[in-house]
Length: 114
Image (cartoon, rainbow, N blue to C red; front, side, top):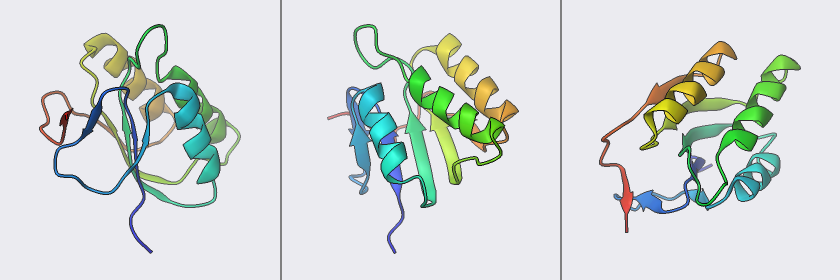
């Protein structure tokens, strides 16, 4: 089975062209999490600001709730790659507290505007 990589970002894609399921809004991100609820997500990439008033917080809240209920979503690594340092820090703190493996990735070249 191929690796499952999900990118939640309104503008960016993977610079290396790696296969990923992409959500451009928080609603699309929620739909991808629901569609893959019973499968391991190898990598989940989160951008904080998703255009307009939309943010990734609805996705983060679903992850928090799942962990609180004792059924965390199985994710190998969550990478927060937001250009919003305050928002990125809040996401990382919330998900760290829930036991997810999270890293902040400012300045990574893996995601970019294409």
